[in-house]
Image (cartoon, rainbow, N blue to C red; front, top):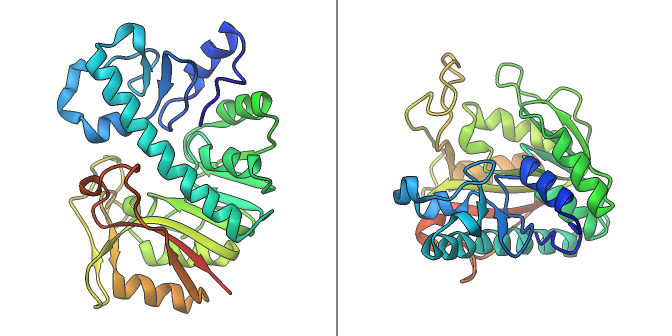
Amino acid sequence: MDLRPYLKTPKLVAMASQVLSYQPFILTDDIQTGVAYSWLHHEDGGRRCYAQSEFVFDRNFCSQEVWERANDANQRLRNMYETWLDTLASLLPGASVAEVGCNTGYFLVGAQRRGMGPCTGVDEGDYGPTLKFLNEVLGTHVRFRQAAYDSWKHTVSGLEPHDIVIASAVIQHISDPLYLLSFLGSIARKALFLFTGMGDSDDYLVYYSSPNKFYRDKPFPVCFDNDVCLSRGLLMKSLEMLGFRRIIEIPWQSDWLPLEWKGSQKALVCLRE
């Protein structure tokens, strides 16, 4: 998302550099944020250029090579995100949106800028200051509540139903993916958007990798927090049983992150119609 038209003073740019990081925002001609560089060029290690965090890139502190790589990677991530948002806005104009694991709120402010809303985000990180800042500079009204999906209780306490529920790269970190899907379905009135890995099998399978990659303190059985996914057969059957009758896969495009990064991940709009 390009914030250059809205960050008209050095003070606003400095504030944006402090509260934005992981998701791909352009702050100025020389400063941008985003995780995609680390995904595509993790071998660069210490050659990254940091401002406030590892996901804030300032051209003044980068080699030209690193800046160009970061710019390309994060632009590809923006292209992907913008396509998803355009698709949702086209299919369900004006719909309300909730997002589990919203991070800095890219999808939610993007949805409101397309005429959708109300929009609500939850995340276990405190992105309240970030959403407050984005609401002020963009004129949006996204609501944020600090909360996490509870794998013991299989819920996000207090998250009310919305027309569309977004869960992008969430299932992969959750040990109880079927319960998560059930919860997401229970609060999605019209559609569920998933970006998730999907195993290439029509059998009913769940795939796990080694536990405690990201959350060292989580005990068994809620410790499987990396590359969790369902097989095609189990995911599609689960969506059918939750009442989603039409599944649209948003096809990969050449200006997105490359196919080798995408791997088995699918961008799925799951509609009740």
